Image (cartoon, rainbow, N blue to C red):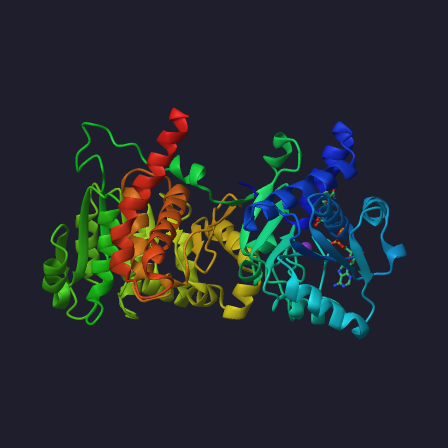
Length: 528
Ligand SMILES: NC(=O)C1=CN([C@@H]2O[C@H](COP(=O)(O)OP(=O)(O)OC[C@H]3O[C@@H](n4cnc5c(N)ncnc54)[C@H](O)[C@@H]3O)[C@@H](O)[C@H]2O)[C@@H](O)CC1
Ligand SMILES: [K+]
């Protein structure tokens, strides 16, 4: 599914309004209905349905507030006890928002204009009793920080016991950046209209939006798949189509040979974990190149792989290149980096790899730190054979010679710019990993959880991407597939363990299960 910034969303809405003559009021009404539907789903209903339940709706002066007033009217019609708190002078509401104000005023719902501290007690009581709190303060029109008075009320909302639903985007989260200045509404659910906004995936946005529900509000489907939009969020259906089909007569040769250059003294685990990631993602033949001092250890820990002992006792040295070259014959993919250590001698091996190996190459961890010392090496690849880089923000900061804060503030822009500049697929890891393609497209990954913040999970991901490449998946899709399933594997483990205490090996072990579930869901869809 495509993901848009505020300007792109406005253009789509304008097009729908002008081309098909859909009145904006109708879009607002549809938006309101989508929110009401979601409220009906999330509030546990008694025999009486929503009748008698309490709702508080915080309304701002823009169209987001207009949506909120339309929701308020519908909730009154459903029998709810509705209190609307307007954070503007009523005359400031214009157009569709003003009309919805007028319609709400014709109902039995209560409405208060909040001007300062004096309504604080009333608001606090209403929020304490509300089954649902609806945030219609600001939508995609907000820039900068929330006004001071509203900030204080937002803090109250964040302490309210009821279910909090944000309309379009949590108020206080900037639609284009996800930036939160001091505070924002912490929603359990965000119902967003047309297409999801960048801010739901960037900055602090993901921490505030809760579950995201997307409703097309009757905008024509053809507008929502605009070719000009180049940011996407990965969904089950997209990723399922990337899984390579296994043929009945397939064998280890057709499932691809991959080379993993990894490990050093004290970090043999990195090769083992990357190896497990590759094997659990279906690689046909895995060959690990490791320094002499640990080759036996790695061999004993990962029986399914062939391990080649290469020059270098504790770390691979310059001579290791010959082993890498020999083993890479007929290889479909190569990954280098996990656990290599910051061994300056390995730079020349990386140089040879980039110059001479023709299959797709994944560079991770220490390989990236070494490249950061000589970023010009990336140009040796010149787009030949596919290049994938999988940095976490620290590694990306070193590669770009800037601070981690700079990376985090501009994740999307930097990932895309560097993917284009380096002619590489860039997997910028984080709580929402971004996969950027050299053609300028970017994909947000919605899977995964904080349980992945543990040593070794990155190695598993590198191995998994290596395996998808070895099976013939294109570099961009191998990155998407690897990242998405890795996150899903962690989400599967979280069902049992929550967000901590599962290990990188367990993440690897879950990959076939989540891949199978995805394939199976597709078959069910086809059966209807
Ligand atoms: N355009 C459309 O056709 C539709 C829009 N809809 C809703 O309309 C919303 C966008 O409406 P608007 O463009 O009116 O934007 P908002 O409702 O987000 O409000 C913008 C208003 O807040 C002010 N403002 C911005 N930043 C501020 C700050 N930091 N402090 C104080 N005031 C600030 C602006 O000057 C403007 O008056 C969407 O998010 C969505 O909820 C929906 O009704 C669906 C249809
Ligand atoms: K909102």
